[in-house]
Length: 301
Image 1 (tube, one colour):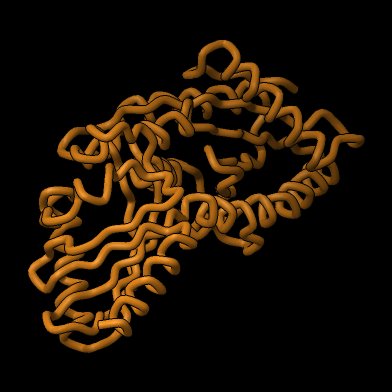
Image 2: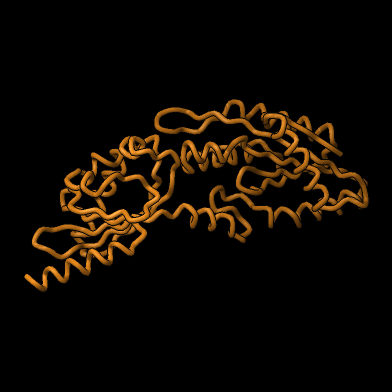
């Protein structure tokens, strides 16, 4: 008995220094034990969770995924890992506990020793890590949409400017941002924001001309390089994009989420122009649209 008490004391001490949420779950998905020191997720008290089923806490689809992880972990006697979005609009229990912002978590399950089959489940908030991964990506293509990114766009833009100057042509650049995407991410979850970006990317790809160059730039939107396109034609092209977006939406919990875009357009000014200055002018025009409420187009030569 003395050894058992010592082991329990050590386990309690270990749980007290963990910042992650820890649950012990039975084979049937019943919460046997929980620990939530310094958790950003409002679970409620440990006693409040004890005895509850997964279906009492998690939405049906996620509860089924977690039960599947329990079955595989016990059946294969190995660690199971999964990333899950916690969206308070779908987590009624967490919403009732005061959760207002969605977050990404990593769930890790491993078999636990004991008389009855059970698993230890660790839940860690990885929202910052996922955001950092997105921001630090240095590859030529965007991981979410498969489109080229800004790193790939800039040399193509510089080459297009050089050709336009050499052959007395013109070109334009269009920057397209989803209005209030960060607010959508906060209120609806990153999965909805991602669906919007994917839907917009697909539609832009189908709308652009063969010679145009489409890239994702930043978290909120895209750029389209328009060869042999003057300022007036660039504004007309932007209007076609804005009209197209008015018919788009992204699915979320059985409903469609409509969205709008702001578009800034810049056109080559002459031999002294550069890729950076042209991009900056398009960016300035874009910011003007956003300051005026979004769902607008602004262009500058």
